[in-house]
Length: 424
Image (tube, rainbow, N blue to C red; front, side, top):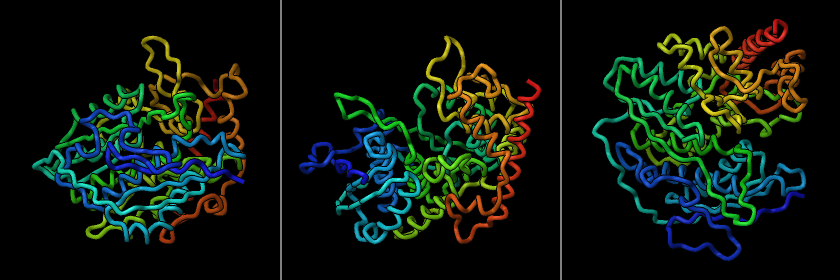
């Protein structure tokens, strides 16, 4: 039986204390410069209460996720998580709790107990801008978000584009490079907000945190939604190619939340239902504008928007970035993990990326070749509509055949990558 982890409670005031037996969480758990704090984000207007609540819940969930080690559980994965968060729209959140719990279970694979307490949280007046952002999107600095931002930035309009970035430790220079590549080609006003996703350790003895980050996408989404609500933008864009949005498991051991489901159509469906349940005014719709595209189609769209191969190479796609990089080397992508393999297939024929290793290298260790073997076995087996819906359900309004088409095209691109091994 999965043990219940010590319960977490989010403290809205710096001087507040957690009840006995509860582990306190707050904004102080984030390694965040003061000018990047949530109440200092440069937005058009204060966010509505429900959006502030959603953002606070996103930060609390991610902090709790990182402070609860999976290796302390019987199966080294599934945890029982208990969390209490202060909210301003208490009654609406209490009614929407089952939706939130379902969403968190889908994302992390854990058992969640989430409670709320009514709180008169002060409304922060941000550093306001005179102009309103007509479009708001997540900008990670990866290939997909770069492609989408480049496309939208190339539209000649006076309406502003707002990009939300979460800083990547050790790879901030790549995010800056990606942003510069679109900023210097912009045909419209662009504004960017950068926040932290780095959690401080509360354990002085062990000093380490949970390595998996299944709730990170929820943190991203809640931040983009809050910004869109403050800007009165009807849509919050989270760009991810259709292959990795579905992220079909390459083996039974990667099913469900064992693979990332941050932008899966079912995840976005649950999130949009949650927003509709708690919003007391205009509703922000979360959309993935690249859901119908393969990685190669996304890369082609980036080229059509004016980016060159060196711009695309200076991006981060890796799930396990190299820890040791030779002095002066621009190593950010291992070249072996599944996101890197999808990246390689998308950039095939125009890839200037410097990878740490090649998956077809005969000298690779058994462990390092794990993803390449899994991919080979997956491509050797048929993939049908049944496989698509067996892992994670699709929303009621989804077109499963259209989604299957994206996966089928992506499999073809990955098969072409396999041919490189034959020629190597």
